[in-house]
Length: 573
Image 1: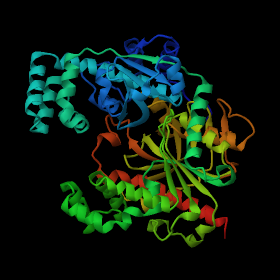
Image 2: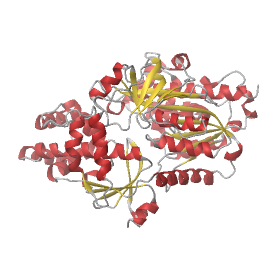
Image 3: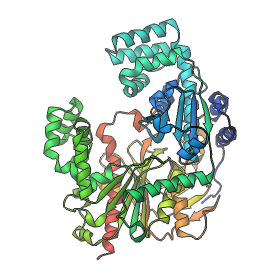
Image 4: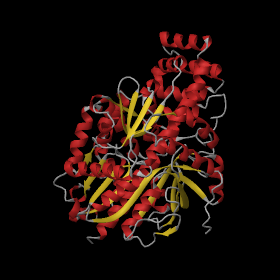
């Protein structure tokens, strides 16, 4: 294997990162506009039209999905690791600020109601994510200000604000004409903003916004302190669980698939769900159910019921409380993140309290009735961003008795597959440490393929962990593609750095080939493709995939739980 990882196409990315890190050392706010030239020179694959007069609506849509709605009114973004850091710099009343969220990012964020946004950061990866996103947003916002701020644009926006959007297709077609873009791109933004679109576009067209950014602190000690406080909150929430005395399996995934599969609660409510779908469900939901019921389309009945349950809970708020009560009876506990930098929910599962007869039928392994003999835990976290993964796994490993497995499920961009495919790497190059990790991935294609309906499974892949979603360009990706790297994501490298430190008596190295084949526990990494960056604008969030988008999520989680349960049952055979 050629150890020389190519750097062509990466120099401008590194220059961009050095630029904003050096500027953020300042004790005063830094105007985003000073980063625009470096951002444009990078030629980001997510921002291919940064240098063009024509708006890049794909880049704008990506940014607005990951920034809170109030970003239109923000003039200053302040970043810090903890409330202590914010108080130290004069922000003493964050509890009275408005908590704001974004659909595509989990990050504790507060708005003062005027022009300041306070953002909690858990690692330097949050900076690598947020800074380029703000620059991209400001670039594209300025283009729309120029194109819609004329008489024709303002007249149309005021008309649809007054009368409402009566025909979304016609509205998007007119916006495309005014901005020299495609109506399809505007339709994607309409799906995000919906009835708020006229108001938000009027704000953009009439206000020339300039955003500044400030980092209050950036020490490694502060990041570690924030991680420690996050784990202390978990221990305080479950005082009867002996984390220091019980073995545990670590999973990084999401907060819905594991709980649904282990509790089986939506499957128990099938009659209620079917009645809801037929009587109150949307037309598309009813059509999807009938297609599955009549076997007109290949699909998983269980996966569809999990999807429908989410819709049902939105219409029946009390149903969520009933589900949580059932999960607790099954030994599944949820600990939401509060008052810490990490906006990461934790799920702790006591394996000996699971009712195996309720579990998803795809988890019914031989000998599953003996699971009550186990004293092990599952610790599942809502996957963190970038280097936050390294800090979280290190903190958990320090506070539990024994690690029996590390299983990572996450989204990735694919350079050779399609959205919905599953990639299984056994080589990961980590841009954070410059290490190339070689490891035995405990999963292969046969572990996932029986449970994946629509996509393909590609094992023996090579992945690269990038520092940020905007911090990649076509040249950078093409060179790695020639080296056989086809799987781009953000967490595997930091997790494997932590696995190294869990297996060796020293800190992980830098810029080396690292052999992890002798890890003392199974390590599994499964990625499902949510982006195809060589096909511009194609990502899972921009497409209306309905419940089909759950197909790779549940296929990978089923593979993880089957591997985990089989490993634990082997301890008691």
